[in-house]
Length: 314
Image (spheres, rainbow, N blue to C red):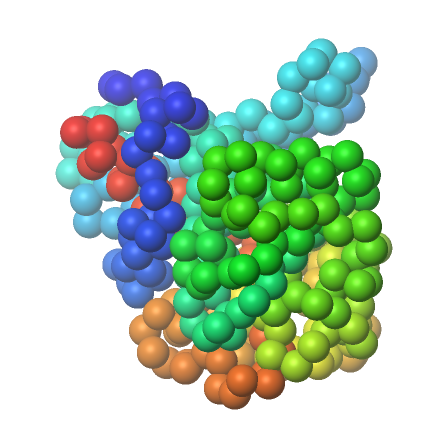
């Protein structure tokens, strides 16, 4: 069994190829049952969460193993530890163990890129990245692989974090015009595409400030108690999701307004499978505001793991 590190994952992947691979996976042929969720009780520390995310197609099986340990910050360790085990479908033989944290960053950003192919305006000028955590640079690069942008704005709760990300984007040549934004509200009004990856429980994106034609990409708020957009944002936009099963049960940006009676399940126009299969055309007008909510799916892990294995000669 090959051990594939985070550096190996970075060397194996690029966003155009990974986005194409995800599109193929969403077109069908992948079985992805609901993830298994287990709480691990601890007498002397915070409870842990164990997640098991399986998926398989006619060639491979994959299981992502995730352990969330809230107390790891005090140990100078990441709170989330993850691995993806890739197996041969016919024999069950283990092919590779892949760094799950890095794979997740890549596949999550690629799912947003896939949605943007169908939902982002054709000629955007400004991309706004809300949040400056580990996922943020991947999201920026993923969006840049789909549409050309002249300007990239970065907003974070701490200006220093936004400035660090903007500087790194300029340094690696991905976004020469990347700058930190001091005012989120002002940046929202300027942006053609807004990508959010935060742990916020209070709305950040105000629908009243969105310009006609804006595409909103919501990647954080992965529990019903979390929220990145306000009610007006959701009500003004045409709504799309990565999967109905995930986003309508776990994504607070949709769960909360549905439970409050502000929108209905029927307001969600399509999931990624329907977009890539042509069952829904995606954006229908230049002034249409679109919103994509993702919570992740194990078929994305399988697709990414298979591409990584192939590019590592496995």
